[in-house]
Image (cartoon, rainbow, N blue to C red; front, top):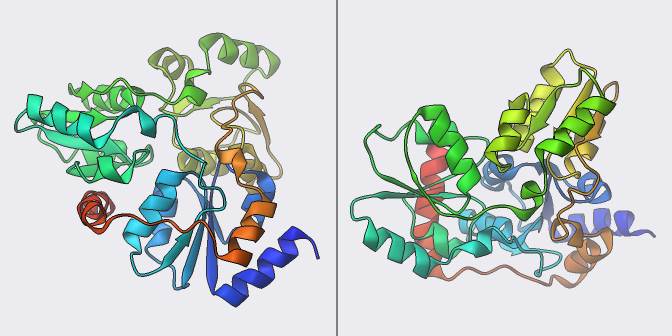
Length: 299
């Protein structure tokens, strides 16, 4: 019996559901019940009937699933799968920032720890940030953490000014204007899709700025047959699977998140077999963080 077959059996035995992020390995996405971006998976986590949720992604995502499902067992195949951007701000640092800006609303990208979410009024994802942020009054003071690039992208779309925390995703920061220009030379005419976590210069050099979920939707609806994709290379598996007649080129083969790739079929099977690496969030943090996530999901 191979790992995929064992996972299918264990999933039934444990009454488990497997959620996988678009950046995980292709073979992990293939055994998952649902694959998506942060927004898609946050919504899906509230809809599952299973007793066990196995989250194939990084730690903050599994935390979010636990916060939304406090009565369920949430497991992660590798608890060391983290997010450098999420680690760029702590709850204490956000409390200090709020103290320096009395009356301001604290907004966090969902790519943040439960402790940071607990200090915020609302969360956003790259897929819903513009819609969520448009609900604030134009003159309202906003603290946006931790991603300066997503915050800058949304503030420009809405023509507003936010106080931006200087966090960033090292993976998306590795995408350059030069790499986009090189990809255009190799694939002339192919639209360039980049993630809003990229720098402003890169976003400006692209044709479209989209979440990974948005990229999947765009690829389905577009008449184009080739696309240049500026985000973590794991998304190409889903894009190609959903659009077999179309071709997808990474801006660079080197845009790889090592943390996402820590999730393998082997540690996923072991996780289910031994029911190990359970995700727990302290109740006081969970209760406050859930308010911020629920506020986002309500929009």
